Image (cartoon, rainbow, N blue to C red):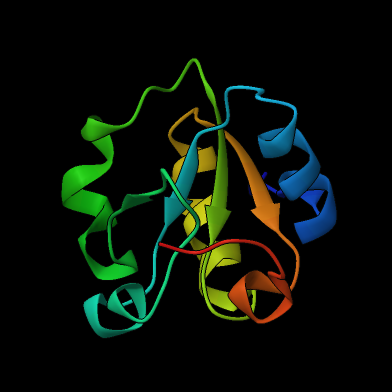
Length: 103
């Protein structure tokens, strides 16, 4: 049976959690140029193409909120990581829906 990422979060929900000071682990899977244009503060950057080699840099015990530009690549990343036992949540709409601060 294929992994199906059911867990999703909206940009507003994520922004609220960050503002409350909740510990969140955000993984940005966009390309370096996109990352440089602005990303969620505190996010970790691993481009989707590098994820198969670099997933060991992530903690499978922690909830990981995965973001890309619009939600497509992050959905693929969630599938890839979920199949390896990671606790993943897809950011709906990606950075296109992000209204809060960026670094």
